[in-house]
Amino acid sequence: MRAMVLKFYGGPEAFVLENLPTPIAGDDELLIKIHASSVNPSDVKIRRGDIKIFSGKSYPKISILGYDIAGEVVEVGKNVQGFRTGDAVYALSQGKQGGGYAEYVALPAKQVAHKPHNLDFLQAASVPLGALTAWQALKFSHRTLAGHDILINGACGGVGIYAVQLAKHLGANITAVAHPEHQQLMRDFGADRVLDYSVDDFMHYAGSYDLIFDVAAKRSYAECKSKLKPNGRYLTTVPNNFTMLHIVMTHLRPGKKAAFLIAAAEGSRLAEISQLIEKNILRPIVDQVFPLEQIGAAQTYYETGNTQGRNVIQII
Image (cartoon, rainbow, N blue to C red; front, side, top):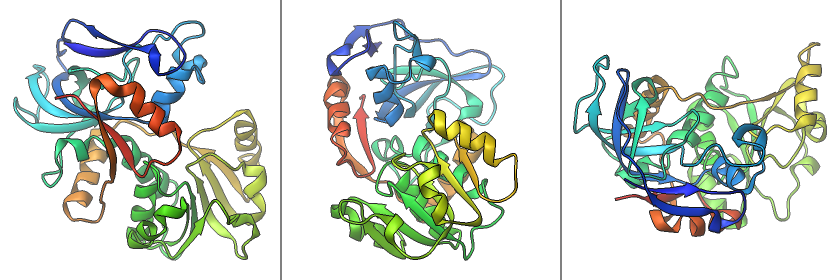
């Protein structure tokens, strides 16, 4: 199979197209012929060597990136139920390899869900990591969001667009901080107030929040603490050493909390998201589509910071 392999840490030139053996599905796995994947922040950070504690100190142990998967089942493990050859599926890959930047991947069936019938493969590939992160952050971090005041920083990105839509679905009052060109999209998705991050600092606005979801990871808990209500929570998906310290300290006492989330690759939750998509409660946004051989260019475009939703990699 063709695969774009990460050979070293560095720039876009670190990816090399190679021919590798096609994986074989284990007893509890599905072999998926990949139609599309996407560019996620984690892919870029691994390529640059920003998170070597995870990907290897001197050499990238994760050689095939791509954590969003959309494709067709071509082999079913003997212990797997609920899937058959030919099924259109999508998944969040989670493990030692992403595997999406290749023509085939073998994944545990428990990570896989049937693709929403109203999405094509390119659209479906933009969903798993972003939607699962937003769903788990909002639905499972609070008992209820109805009537709560939420600020989403980085609202037009691959996680933020789902966070806005889900928060509206769950009845929250939403302040979205986004790129100036994406203001109307945020309103269309249900944001009650939209701030232009290039000119507006939400710290200067009156009011406080039950939840500040810092998807963009641009503000710390220490900065946001004054804007949280007495039992409010600061949540990010990209923690640093200071965030980890704040998480420990705030959970030792009542009141305001700091937390971070790493999305779990659970097919059952992704199936719930499929239902929301099929009911038009959630809508994915694909910015640009790149062929497999141009993953370097796709990541370079992502690094400009102008992406709306996800950039997608078309495999076949």
